[in-house]
Image (cartoon, rainbow, N blue to C red; front, side, top):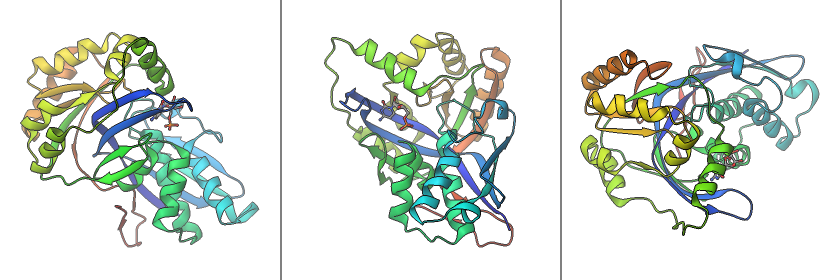
Length: 311
Ligand code: C5P
């Protein structure tokens, strides 16, 4: 028997970053929107814990125990006292979310493996327990489980679900190389030296724009405090942002810690136009369109009841 879970990517429509905390993390006001680019995580009983990965960027995915999917399986097994063959599982990741792209691809695989193992092993962890394990695995992992739209506070792991009154159409431009999230936060700290970094707060205009489903209002309110740091480490991203703006995108921003860039369009047709212009611009590696919000981690094993999660 195998269990397959489908997990979405995210874009941060607001990423407000506070000063570095004593533990090295940063307090955030992080408004996540799940979008329709997905990884699929399949777990199958095996002789030992093993991770494989397929997809365009599969070669860049670590297959050892640093992989968040492997760590999720180990964390669930440990909490439920499963050991040896009981907890041995082959985790296969069919990867479509860009690797090291700022779209929570690794977090998606962690949340997906957790839900898949919980289903395969019948551990029936409560929602709170799953969210706790996700928060231990990484700041963005709880959102990958929950999906939709949410405001993350603390280091991003404490979630409040947000109402969204419509579908937003996006274009994503993937860069020729990745950016490391810790490196981008370190660059944020370097650029903030000597400055007074305000407490991160969610923008009311942005939350209202989401609730109304109004792309023009959302475009006026999006922001990413990590963008200057990402551009400092990867200056060519400015050319991609400019190409998307010139093609008529309502807003252009770096997604999370980057280097994927995100472009908001008014509807699907204009998203396709922006995508075409970006492809022709020669400023990025690949271009995808996706809309959101979409549900979080969902069991999609053929024959199994579809189980969307949500908070
Ligand atoms: O939580 P996660 O492991 O995904 O974070 C990766 C890295 O990003 C952390 O090690 C830290 O350098 C940085 N980070 C941060 N503040 C946050 C979230 C992440 O500094 N709120």
